[in-house]
Image (tube, rainbow, N blue to C red; front, side, top):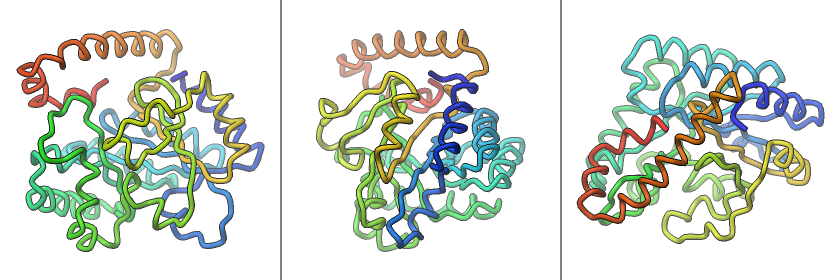
Length: 277
């Protein structure tokens, strides 16, 4: 399920049926109610893999939205790669986790967010839409997730020119859409992506066995976002499957470990490790 050749076939088939993706920012600017498809990517590590997906999408006239963890801008080679993604016509923007990195302190989170927005823009990446990072092992007190940053009224007013995909994209878009994600190494339609951090609605999610099923669903829907994590994609099936098996093993152990309060506190200190899997 996470092999480049499969993504290429998926993008080719989308092009053949006339469902070429646009960026999240472009979708917001549309006022005609036409169908849209957004290929969204959360870059938490390894921008080179993101470039590979970007090249495949560009080959078939797709334009995607690539949300990048700010720490990746600390290396010049990463910036060069991300500029290549941008030059292909894709949106490159901010994949923030400012609530987690500041333990829920909204004022400190705002300072960090502003700092990194400026850093992205210094490198030529215009920030019009952003997407929060859902750290799976973070221990939180007094807030639900990084989505709470843009749920804050003052923050929303201060950064009114920025739309948060997981908070106010739907309201600003003025229409509903289907949100499909590869979260947990399993493709599924997320029933309520804007609020499932506050209320468990996972029993309402719908799983897909493969990209072919997703393709058929896209054909039947007018508005769709497909969200992926580029670091999970590989050139060969064996590598992709090995990584998936490894991920599921780690997840099973984590479920047991996280039941121990002291271990949850310890893992929360190293939440950035979750980006690697």
